[in-house]
Amino acid sequence: MSYSKLVFTAGLLLAMSCAATSATAGEAYAPLGLRCPIPEKSAYEDTTKVADGLRLRYAKVWGKDWLEKPKPQQRIDPAIMGEIAAISGCAAIMDLPACATFFDPEMGGDLSMFANFSTKVPVRKQFDEAVAALPSVEAKKAVQACMKLVAKK
Image 1 (cartoon, rainbow, N blue to C red):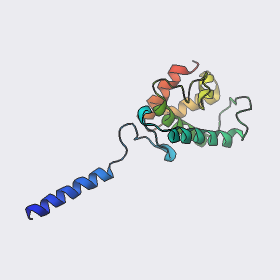
Image 2: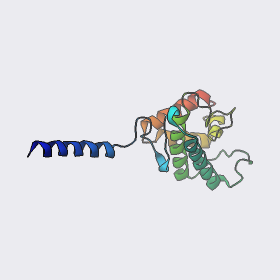
Image 3: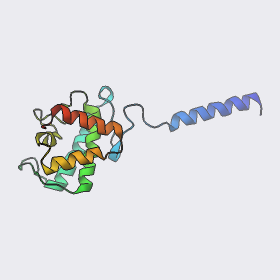
Image 4: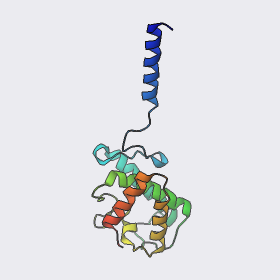
């Protein structure tokens, strides 16, 4: 193999490996088509998509007027709770370290209903179990850190 062909092949392999690289650090977790960047890299669109994803699942379970109803305390469909937990992982990654946007009950974030419930309430237990079952260690730790910071015990 000639030197120029070797250099070309090496350059091509390098370019292909760079193009095939998945997300950058802090963006590796991307459930349900969401982008979950670290706070310094998150955009308004990322936050909006996460909030919309949560609201869509809440409406599936509790109806379109879920926000105006008393907060449900019974367990819900496990598949939907799994999706809520996955989205909460994305939310937590973007929300750390303060966890104010999505989790803080005082701010009324989209995940604050789980933070408002004690760990003995069935839907909160189910949420905690679904979070513990997340395949992404980064997402799991982020949600657990946010819940530890703002949630009732």
